[in-house]
Length: 224
Ligand SMILES: [Zn+2]
Image 1: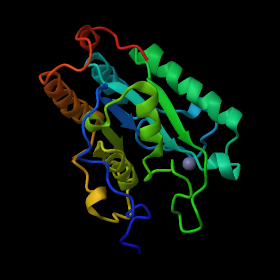
Image 2 (image 1 turned 90 degrees about the horizontal axis):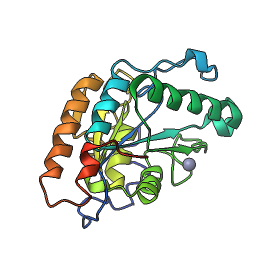
Image 3 (image 1 turned 135 degrees about the horizontal axis):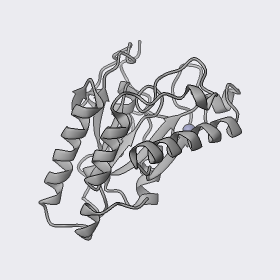
């Protein structure tokens, strides 16, 4: 079992100067936002995790951008086609909007396979930070005031490598527990409700610092 992450040669982005931008909750999809399912192709079998929709609505109202970042090696190895994946995403985003009024700011997908050791062979597969930095650029996100939440330590590490905080939503998915400072969660939760309360509080704390965005955007609906 390797103790080193394949990305340990990269400097962590923490400590970089702050740049203007909005706070964001980056979230893993399978196992975090939606339940793991044996059949990952049929949209009718898509199940949101308990409390996820309500939590995202709460954070959206607090002015937090919401971005899905998902490793989808199935696209590379043929377990799911691009058309099937696009259909699933469409159903997921529509349900979040219809049932909870949640508008997801962006979706970033890594369609690449890991190498034979299971390590990322691209710059975007988590625990690499590529999807987060790409989304930050696209959507004007301040990574230093953002969080990455997932159900494995690879998600936590990806958040840290991007310069964000890393939160673990512990549902038993993580079984390896390969530890390193970059994989140490800033906080650990067992349900979406507690996580939303935590993030909302910190996002509100950021609001008390010199404003970096028009104040009305904190109180109205934040557009994607
Ligand atoms: Zn990739």
